[in-house]
Image (cartoon, rainbow over all chains, first blue to last red; front, side):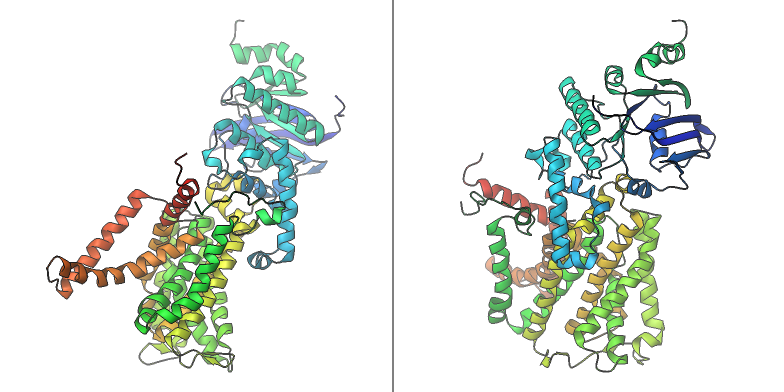
Length: 260
Length: 358
């Protein structure tokens, strides 16, 4: 592969997150390097999605520090994280059901659209020009994801696999630095999984996007990721390249139980 | 057969982003607007203008405003009547307190004042949603009912509590006759429908719909919920406020707070639900249904009665009107919960294939 793994882009240090008395994450530290594919795995309820929610500002950890590009990140709201270049897809598809595929992906361009509401109401020059400019970008993403034929379809009517693809498209429209993927292949058949893997690797390769991936399909994880973090009951029990993690006794214990 | 998009190719994104992407739609709507400007004034009589057409146009505008908020941004409001009142009273005060205030400026400033109040009463939407928000917006209704009744300043200390505006004129064009009033309202409604359509197909409209459909995801892709919701409240209130000002100035001429009671709020919400949430066209359908249908029933029922040889008393007609009107609402909501606009869309879908079923 031609891509070069760069420096640490996001550094999480001693993150702890509690909901009342429930400890979702306990003292977790790991880093994410530029251009890498970083997987987070673990059994159900291990805190993987919570981890993503911490990264993009939905949850606020009680303890720990987050450094993004070397700077400590203060209090963060999701839309602020988005404007610093962190995009994500959702485990249960969270598309805008009433809107077409095109509009869903166009919504991802929102942060880059600057004309004011008056110009938009009058559909005057700059607003129209901006709309066309971003439409061009969106069409590139539509081509990339091979969903040209459904661009005008309301997403509510699409089958599951395509919805997942649109979800990815919407995140890509933001031209993110870091792309968080929450189980992008859950519930897919083999062909759909292969397609999705191809898209993820292409995004990583062509746009140099750093990818953080939660996935249950171990074959996929071991295949496409550069480094893997393993969580169990909100604690980190493994971190390293896929082969290291696979061989770690702790990880085997978490997945298969003791005594093996 | 006629309604086909075959051969209408688009080679630019601009062409694909037009309001009407199918040529027949465009000509149909342009024809309708032309008919409304030229045909209707020749055909309709004074009663039609006063009782049906002017109320229909103004309430369509208000329904359009409510639809932007409820249908596009998903924030339920029961305060639309109050916002109409704010628009009417604000425009009235601009008119009487500032010398030489042009009529159109007063109407628009009424809308701007309403937008400000809309933002204020929209603040609870940042915390509560759904039915709870509906109850919170009810506060606007009660507050306005009280304020315009009790605070004399708003009504310029008129002893009877009612206010009136006369001698409407724009650039020397005095608007007295029903036809002129109708045309004046028509200009407003066409312009505002155009603005509404533009907003909903632009980035701001997508933000509203994103908040409506999935607010968590919307925030994650960088939409600020506060901006999206409050801008929806502001724009919606602006529309409703202008409609309220027109209602007071053009339709009523003189009015008191009861003209904008909670009944009006419910009526507007029903228009939007029956017409179709999230559809510009639907706002017009809904307004037409609620304004015109009772009048039509009123006219048709005696004729129907005479046909089968039954004399229906005036009271009987009034009762039957309510019964039929109510059952029609239930009927339409069962047949198509997404409103008349969806029925219209389905009809167009079918027409594209007609006469071949597949």
